[in-house]
Image (cartoon, rainbow, N blue to C red):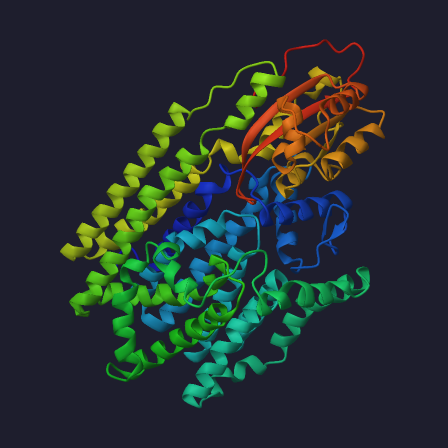
Length: 604
């Protein structure tokens, strides 16, 4: 353990763990609905337009979150890819860097709080956790927010241990970065921590370096120019909508079906904080006597800081009606340092605490080992019975439902490896083999990411609807004599991933809107009709008679014939944002007169 945590080696190991956890899904997962695709599309539009002030999703202002993550994504895409390529992995790189920053900042702050070995253990466990790894592989704000917030709290920990103006400047930089990433969250976490400590200890002199004028000026210079610019550009709408339309309603009531009772985050903790949950309960049993002054003064001050960091923010999010699992991620570094503390003093903890940590870890591992392969089995079949019925009635071609044998073997193999690592961790923990339990716990966390985000979810073919539409569009040169990037798509499947995958000019609307859009154009158009949202439309394509249907079969196909439809593709899958099976029909219209009629497209 001492060898692993020595010198720069410790930083490289922690960074490598965080990077490995994030990378497990960066290149393998398709653009995710809905937030990731909205963030990525807004960034792509910045690159296309050259306007790096306003945040838009197609023609709609997206006045919800600040611009910071978009700037970082734009820089990443400009260096590694291009807006035209629509490669989602390039938009995810800043999130991976945010996860690395969070893990390293956890280690830096933890050195001052719990000592180098416990800080190393805690940071390594934090880097491998389910929640940080997930957010580190998604192109949105929360991993970078965790990085900025952890850096700010680590700076506070160092200020409390005697840090000076340079540390204070770092704190203000982290605060400014956090505001640019997600508004008030970083200031809230830092402010609650400071307020709790000052009230608890009645001591504030350690905060004096924060009064050094250059620090607040730095934060203001980072944030104010863009705030002024966006307020001018949106005629004052940004702050009004971000605070009153996005943040405010989440505080008052559950938004977008994301609600939960107090205790929601605590109930999920064994899963989201895996594998660090193994040592959290032992750590808490060291924290409680420390805060009561039963160990020494340093331990008492450390316990107070960690409680002030985690508990007030946790309570705020538990009391908020709107809940999502990642909201409490800024508190996880504090919990990880408590877990690291529990690991280095494992032999001093009560037997019940070790058994509780052991049981929670084992329960989470069992749930994952069963649930993740089950998700693959449920969504790994790219066909649906509705789509098969369509093929049998109105389409040429056949459908062969079933799981890919190669992908099934990969998922089962990674699940077996994960289960083996988790079992080995539990054995090592019971045998009290020291560093082996920590190493195996971290490997279990990485095994989870490989199993879930490297194999099972990428193999869930049913959720790759946007990619399937894009694959159909790639055939436009052969079918419609027009390059894929030149043909416009009009779709009643309205998920943001489709817009990101196909481009900003994608038209979204109802099925009637989509047909009217194509009828108003002379150029070829790719129509995408979502049959799951219109039962009458589904029945018309399936050849079923429905009295009073809004889509009489002959009228629908007369309109398609007038549009010169030349090829159709059925694209079955699952819209996980709506929780329903979905079948899309892709139709090329106004194909060139010399276009040869080729068989209807099969499942893409």
